Length: 612
Image (cartoon, rainbow, N blue to C red; front, side, top):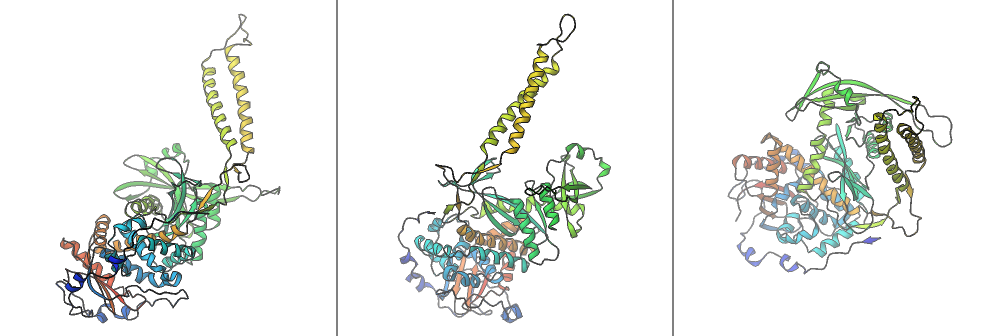
């Protein structure tokens, strides 16, 4: 096992984090306990008393988990203090959602004890796009620590200590399973359409790891593949990191079984790209009663062009583009291969797929979609819209994730020898190159033979050694060689086990315990962000305007105070009146969630001017 070394020690920041400066304490006015009415501030939200605002929801707020056997020595926001400025106040809306809807702190304390502090730091990194723990050296420790409920953000050495204590518990798997399941059960993610796709996690270290595929560069790249499933709104339903290229087909089959285990009623329709199709795969999905939608691979272009304009009887408009649609049925017959030495062939599996042909009116391009919707009964327009929206729901999700959040960050690499020590058979690759060369030579000789006139003797009989005769003999010889090589290729195994070879450098598997912990936070933050964007729909109709507004709120400066009952964060108001109105409305909704942390304090967020 190989574990990367911890960062070099740095000077501790305990002196500047120990307590607020004497000047700040002297300047801060004496604070009174927070109430809903009568709070002295330059600007306050017009809100009624807590009983009228939150009603029964506040009085019966979700209780925290029962005390866990994992010891907890540090509670969040345990310190009481007056108003203090923080340039990270915009992170608090995300924390408030996680605490209220996911019972974030109570669950983390039950699993990791004091390890909850590391996850609060991960939230700051995910929201503010800090790409590594080392970048926290640029963060104001006092201001960030107050906002995260830590008192003060510790030094890098202490953070790495927290990280390794949490990672050594090996509890990322159960944590993710509970998180994914609860999202579905509480309706925090959709269950109508699930888009599954693989995304490269490159590895640039010095160890030998299996190769994944870099789509943009169109070349193999050392790394892993993160198979992520999103719903129709781009929220992350679940994910799984696999070695090398991963197995998309096996993952979708596993998701079908997973969805049935959640007792969802109607199962979700799985949408995936052309990498998935295959008759055996389709047969397995139909036998498993898993609905799916995908592009038809190797579609007959001539067949699609043969349809006339009158054949397209339906239409759909998506993102300002018009599409015409027609539907037909594709009959499929799958005959499984015989298992072992049993001479009895298995029975053939017959099923029908719906083929929807879409016609892009502006570019005149045609493509076909294959669908098996089971009990869903989708229309042609719904099938086409589901397939065409895959880019916006799944691909754009990761485009923005990589731009605005540390999606590729993998803290604390740990490697061990991989269970997969097989490689592609090099003999097959050599035969493929030889076959390709022979096919090229045959093509040229076919042309020469077609253009060559027959050569005859003076008496009109064909010449025995004429040019056409020599070409025909060479073609016959190469065709026989091609058949022999093709037979040899089919008899060779596709992959070889090479672990027993001498002087062989074995493949290493990356331990994803740390990556799963960090991606758990990233997925939770991303889904909370998506929910906040939906909440802003009353203020702005366009999704791009709501995204821009939310990131403006997440980057707001503000102030925080904590007493024995409340933790209050006040955001500085945005300048434009319409954006400020939306900001205030969002804060009211967040306060109305009735978030309560272990220790008994309530969380509140508001908009206003400086309290000083």
